[in-house]
Length: 95
Image (cartoon, rainbow, N blue to C red; front, side, top):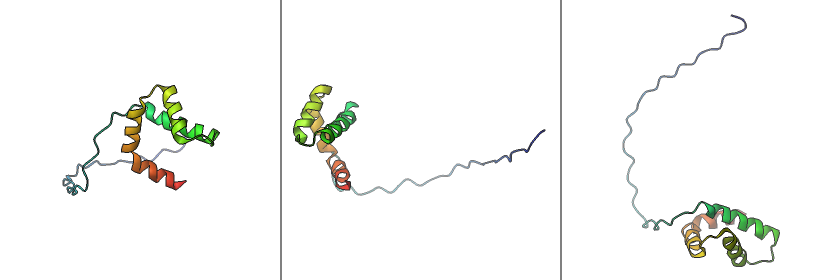
């Protein structure tokens, strides 16, 4: 053989038995699931780009325009936003 030989690493996989995770007390009932359209993320991104491009427009006006162009039901999208409101508020405060 020419050159150096590589050291072979052998890893033994051992199955471990884990205890079931402790049940957390429910603080609030989970929000009813909303059907998430894959275009919702695209709509959020397009809305952000539009607001950056023309900052004089209101958020509702720009959002309505983007949703109309993408043919997304505005009521369903606003329900999705209401469900994700805590996350979006936290992201907005990081700015």
